[in-house]
Length: 416
Ligand code: C5P
Image 1 (spheres, rainbow, N blue to C red):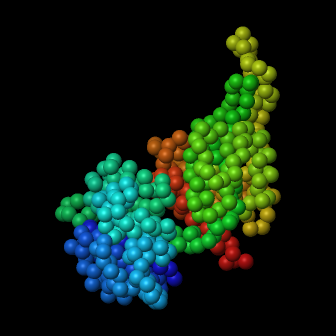
Image 2 (cartoon, helix red, strand yellow):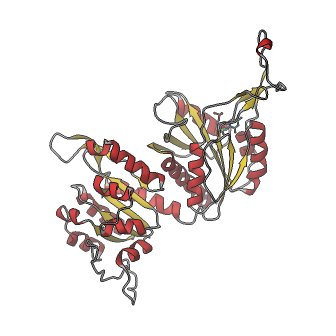
Image 3 (cartoon, rainbow, N blue to C red):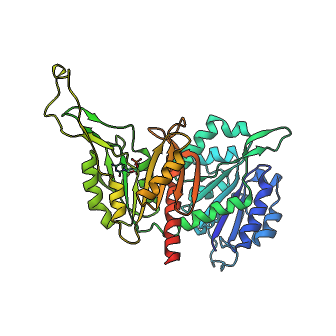
């Protein structure tokens, strides 16, 4: 059971939030509702009050008869400042439906209503379910507001595609079904509940460079953004994070231990040293599969070029070795950049041959995701389940990967 604070904004989909409350309370969650004034034109506060068993708050200065308590809790003796009390007590803040207007305000830190003030004061996970006309949803302004919120760790549930409110309108923008909203909230809650608190997480990021001579190298296009997003997300969940980075040009987040490992050999050494002290390995780095057998001293001169050949040798598969020698209760996640239709099947094979707990695969034939981009679209595969993560910011994808790690670890606990 959790305390869910539900924010309802002005949109036709507000009627679905009633059903959400019905489902959530049936699962014994305690729900309080804050509505924006505009949303009361669609659904009245009395409907939410009947279903939650608690007053619905709307106005900035509404006194809360429950003084910030959730249903079933004792009412405080002193009268608190309403928005701080509700947001401080909530385990999760779901805003559904979230209108384009409220999303814009949240992205820019406005506090012009009880709902937006509460969102600013909230330190619990915030989940946002946008619902609006498809043109408004797809507008670059809305998309950049969503990306901004995601980069701060807000979970945004992608709207569904289908018939929209107005006649003959069809497209992306529908509020997902209440049952799906509840599942997203429950997953987020279980991930947030202490699982990462103090957990030691090793993340690798970037791409290795294998020297040809003192100037040139064989490298790859990995920017390290996905690894950094994972490190940031794990840090925000209270984990103790070590980041092993290979040639990452971006600043790493404060609060984590950073080890530089520019080549596959150095990456191997750092991972072998770091993993025994960690419970989770997220191997997001693109490690070279082959390297020059020998490194030329100095710089190869043009005159040496005719007839010059590079002898390559395979690098050891660091991940497979680490996974093969893993200790009990370690969770090992690999990444696979695959091309085209067979991406999932190939990743599935890697999951087995490398003996991983999960593999995160992205199809690099799709435009606008993966290497160097700020967005990604992946499928997380384990031996017993598979989860597709729709295109979203790398931070948001990182959150879903951590949710999957949390699920794997709790399933592991349950089967012991
Ligand atoms: O087999 P493939 O290179 O596609 O596997 C990708 C996964 O294996 C990534 O998680 C990558 O970090 C890891 N890897 C490794 N050592 C290598 C090559 C890849 O650990 N030499």
